[in-house]
Length: 406
Image 1 (cartoon, rainbow, N blue to C red):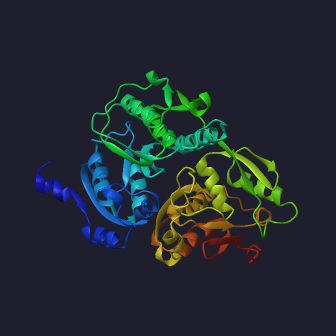
Image 2 (cartoon, rainbow, N blue to C red; image 1 turned 180 degrees about the vertical axis):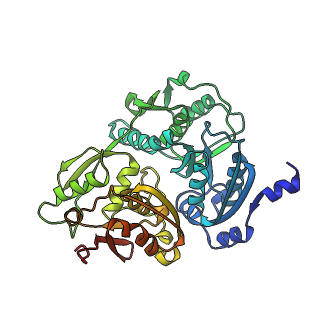
Image 3 (cartoon, rainbow, N blue to C red; image 1 turned 90 degrees about the vertical axis):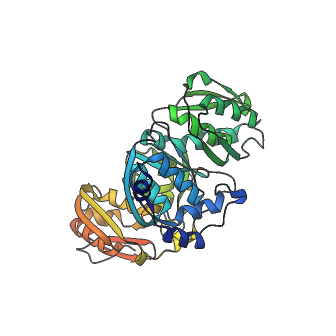
């Protein structure tokens, strides 16, 4: 592709970039990549871009250069395949998610890195990291400094085996089972402020591998990643409306209805649920305790929710969405995600059941650039529901009753 043609094909709207840079996160230290609060702020800044027949590697490196955000593209995503993509005035985090979806992949946050990978990897990765972290912390002999993070950088044509060897020396961890990692040549990348669990997991997941701890946390052994990965966590009954007799049972029923198939049982002051990290975060948002914004695996002192995202007014958000014969519940779950508004839906199951309304009712609608109220009216009218919006909470009730939930 010639220079002028390529310049035309790869267009970033620099006015939008300059404005977001002026009002955005502080420049990263030492001219490197953002981490911590700056990383979260950078993901929340808006970006406008148009790419026409530009390969994925060029796009990701350009984003890294202009936004100082570390991106890691899974080895299974062909970086040389051209992309046709356009986005206007969207959050960088949302743009990366949409860019990944063009390859039938997903973009998730691990530490201070955005990982773009196939769904079979992204649906396991953060839960695997949480499990390995939990196991490490339970080891009586685990070193206090064992999870101290630092940057991990490598050049073009570095092999995964070389990275494992480097991690072994950096973190003084003996790594066994490295023969399961095939020979490969990777493009240059940086993982900013990454601990050994995150780094190992990001490398191994690209071969559908994980590891378990040995020798009290001083060694690891590589092994195949299980087909299904879950972690068990406790969710306490929230104060206020559910803090009454039978609250534990009510909460259990709510979770089972919203997340069918998740193993859940009653426990002291709440319920125990086995699920992925993402599912646990959804439950916490449903309970009104989850932090908005992109989430990363649990790390000591990592409380970097974006206050700016939480403060956005609903009138500023516009939705373009099409659903064809999809369950109503799937729309609610979509809108509960931070990148789609972080809405919280409240309703009474008994009231809906008496009205013959179910969350698995199928709905069809198509809206473009509309506010949340118009989107909900289009969707909920079909289900016989009315709604009331207060802050980030949407209260649902059957049209026939004319009442909103208590």
